[in-house]
Image 1 (cartoon, helix red, strand yellow):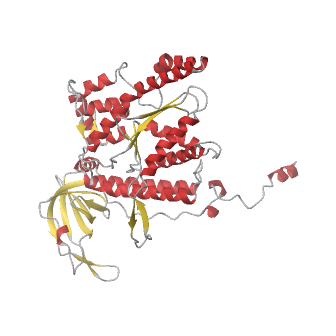
Image 2 (spheres, rainbow, N blue to C red):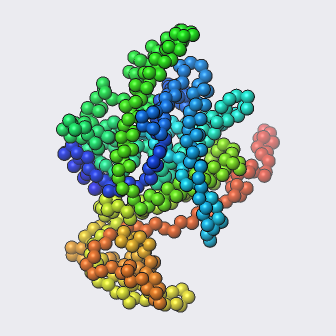
Image 3 (cartoon, rainbow, N blue to C red):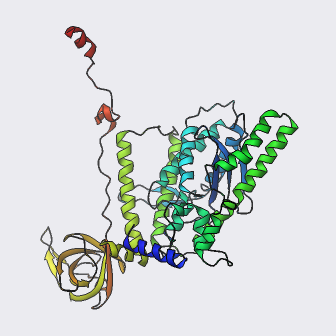
Length: 495
């Protein structure tokens, strides 16, 4: 937690009012996302109790698993709804022309987006995906193929949720917390009811803190799942389960209807809160970098559909070492790029980075627009320089590349850092975006006295070269060792 975040959290706690942490929304929100919340039973980790989902806030679909017996019909209904939503994103595509690194290809114009009420639901969907995608497909069993396909898509979506900046599967508290800071702890912020009470309290509430206290009251609070509280299990679920087990026929059907009504009443408040949160976030202006990240999301979705059409095998339960290294490399790059783009788009993010020494800002004091130097081939290159005076802590080293919010395509290199009495002088050289000596781009030159903020520039990403499977040691998923194990023969000789 940075110094600025701590200050805003203390201010919210003292005033009882939420503090803004961002002016822009940094994740794309679909016009028609799929809202999904789930409740699970005690016992097997992936056994569902109920799922409420849909794209219409006024017409949620409730799927309830029977207290005993097969849950296959419920899973088939869940698969049909979820896959129908995913298939709707494949109705239209666009043509992407060939580039120097990629051939011409098609890409879908949309991608699925699922919004869930908390991070625990993401973990539950991951467990459910692991359970479903390895199930056998039997053409004589209706729905077995769609159930396995649901497991595949749940695994894909939960994998995408680990990538910073991805908008495929979003826990609502995390997205809300990116834009508002409350006076409660980060753990308490994971509760959607209290978090929304801070952000948008009712009119009769004295403050966001008072509204959150009421929302957290035992009588009114409804956990967002997937786990249910013990009192609800003991007092309401258990009697219905026992009645269902003792009865048959119409009495059992009536008990199941009563269970459906109970769970609908239990889940409806959280369903309304999720759409309320969506409305608040949809009202925020979208950051510039959001469109580019959503393009990557659509590309990943298109590639996954291609994989299903050409191969379709379920992903392994445990990744090989090389696959894990590739995934971690992509996650690290996505985190760096997401942080850099947020800083370039949002003044609030830049202010927070300035408190940690990861960025600095100040007025331009001197400019040397005619500076040139000889390049590697001996060609003269235009490299204008200027100096910035800052009172911020500068925890950077000469040679580091920086970006500035005024010219997103330009790059600046630190040439020198000179501490002074009350400030620090940072000499910068423009290394990209300024054109050439013959055709200079003078627009990138700052005016004397202009206040600029510089943040770390995202490095040019190139996927590291990883070894093929046949070149990987057998201890890390490669082929088995060539030599035979003679340990038994050696032990007999020793005896």
